[in-house]
Length: 269
DNA sequence: ACTGGATCCTGATCGC
DNA sequence: TGCGATCAGGATCCAG
Image (cartoon, rainbow, N blue to C red; front, side):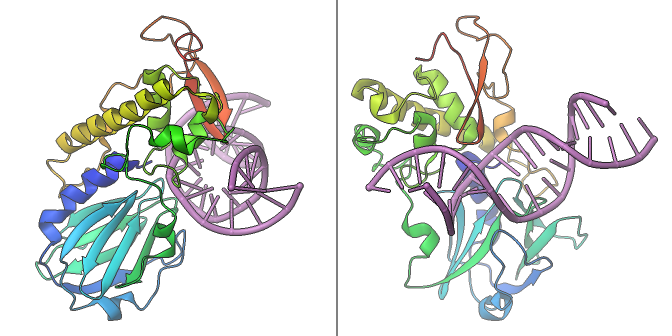
């Protein structure tokens, strides 16, 4: 379940092994992902030098002179740098590099994607994306303004990537708990003051998660691609029935937008 | 324009 | 022990 912090952590881990390298081959063992992989990418991209590895929302962008490979980890995907050829189950794609290493994509549930976008045109999937939560565009009153006329639960609102990207089910729950807002409250019924606070909370939670993820990434080339956020204390996620850290009330469970949601009925209003 | 629901997939876990 | 049912989860697409 990679959320933004994991993708960012992955980006930082891959980067030093890949930037400046030439792609020698792209091996596709399983093209049936969220969207089918273009089977001509190996031919198209072999010989290309990787100029940059960036990120937009939860897409990892491998940039080359003629275009960009967009990798999404879906819910179960991971990338790692490998030097051997021992392939395990669900190793769907290898991007082989001139330094002998490969960027290997593994994704058991195949909700991820590997897409190619030629230079000059923004890919359709990137066009509709909202602001980056860690950028300067995530201005104080942004969420409050966007919420005008929106009656959907605040949790669904902040998870909508046309509003703000990178907030998944775990951090949405954590952020709302820390901000003291009930996940089912209508987005347009959150006061401006509390919405500004929520915005800052989201930024803080994501920043801390990246810091935590980064610390678990020291051996990125190894077999371990464990997410950082399981190491940090989660206040509500997955803790229904347990007591709230802050007030000791029993944490409750709700389904919002088909997503499991845990919250404190006393702290969150 | 906005909203809720179906959907893609596999693996872990649960109930019988 | 083994089986089927259920859940988890990101994001798009479709219907109302």
